[in-house]
Image (cartoon, rainbow, N blue to C red; front, side):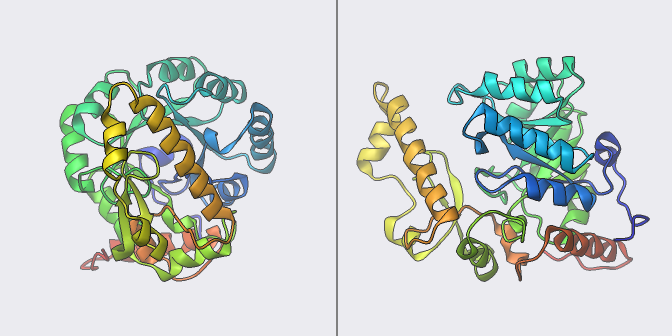
Length: 333
């Protein structure tokens, strides 16, 4: 790839990367090979700490990342009380002085404070301006605006609506998350005021991705119209591919499940059980062959036409971006 064709923004300067794109942290999917490939091709990337079952496994992955690449990489931490491993995971991030941390859910105050003491940047996921303003007061290094086209736990607002609302309450850099599978859409997000994007679903079907061939092929064969929202996986709305199995089992909690989710006495235990069995279902679908397929993905799989190396996906995206920059170029949505 021609290094002179860089896309310079505050995010590229902040992280020392050629293109303003974070390979988004994806539960079960993101791994060392994917992040290394992204770094070598000019992006950066992050891995959810929850992808590692033990402290030793997490530390081994950090060692491998440092050995295989000298570029910037990050870790995603779940900040709410449901993550009983948070303190342990944060300690690993501090020990290895990762380049950045992405926080999701909960109060990120402790994470921001401790990471800044080590010179680690922190970006916080937000889905609306109310939470964005609260988080901004904690002085992270940027906000990740999770819009309605994101994969996994999506927001409710379009990228333009969310960016505009956040810019009214903070001057922090804003990274747009959701709805990018083509370079023209990257151009569009930068024009909307984002300093970069967080992009995940199109990389599920990469050569380096560890998921099953069936999962990758589903990302090729299905499109944006096949993405649906379900509350059956974690109790929180989550985007999945609308496979025959998902259609058969439904996407909404039944009467009993809905009651237990709201009941003061039982809701904590019930949500823990829902989350446990939901994640077990996702893991089984991601790595095995089963008719009970529940595959997480976002609408950006619309642009996935083949299973490709990450370097090729990035090269295509950058080429498409530069074409979109040309006068009178049409935006591909």
